[in-house]
Image 1: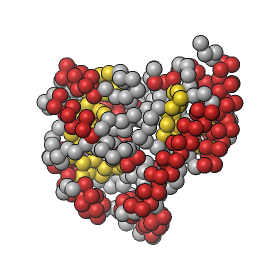
Image 2: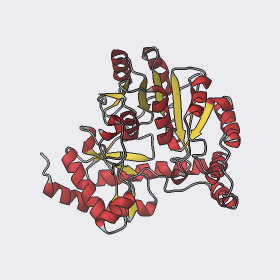
Image 3: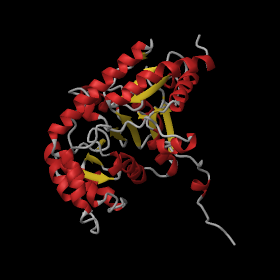
Image 4: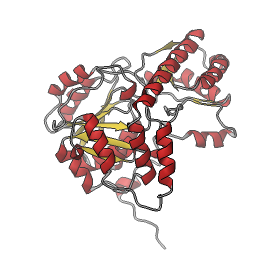
Length: 373
């Protein structure tokens, strides 16, 4: 009797996943979190119109979804100023990043990212046998000049850049990205992850011609639109690359209700404005709570705030664990020196009241375990 015969590439991969979900953490610790502030979800939820559309679509859930996403593309292309053929939908940005890597990266091909940037991208590159090359952050921001220079050195197929950045919340202006593109080497594609763009200051999104073959941009309904559980993401760019996704994508990946909900959410600009306002207030409250505990925060263009715990990764991890034990779920960056921080998602006033009460206790416990200085 024999088992499955995995290819060497798969057999050699570590048995790991990019993130451990809060539900798994709850099961391990034996109690639920009182404040869920670690996954950068939009706790303020989707538009009521989106919820109504989701419920209405449930009555026809026996039907397959439209694999062409025609209605969504029509509305979105009008807003982006491009054609429907410049847009592809998929199961969140995560799924689309996987498709991009599959399209462009053969085993051994070089790919460049920042050391400590969004780990799911790396997960896909490893799965397809790409050679990951990482450059450090410059301060607490991704270093475009270093990324593009490394891409030239190693003849990279893809450079990954998140703007705004996760996990630090930093951002580049659109003008800076536009200027930096001149340094992107020939034959390399910039994968520009704009998951948090709706929260960013005016001018953060670059003005890049839709037919520019050097760039593909990724956005999502998981963050500002409050539909993380629906798994709706999209990419837009030059038609030849976008059309190539049809060769490999799961055409029925996004379900019928998710499509209906996303279309309704996209059309509710008033709700999106309300969410932005609530997130901005929550960021200010997180900063106030940090300052009350003699901690500093990093400027953020996202729906989370990186809080500097004043030590190194050992202290930040101890703070995170102490908060978790007290029912507060947060995360932290994976790589030094950014791992001196914990990352706190925008929460409701009630969530942040819990954080305000528990953070001083967690800090005291952490400092007993990991002395600072």
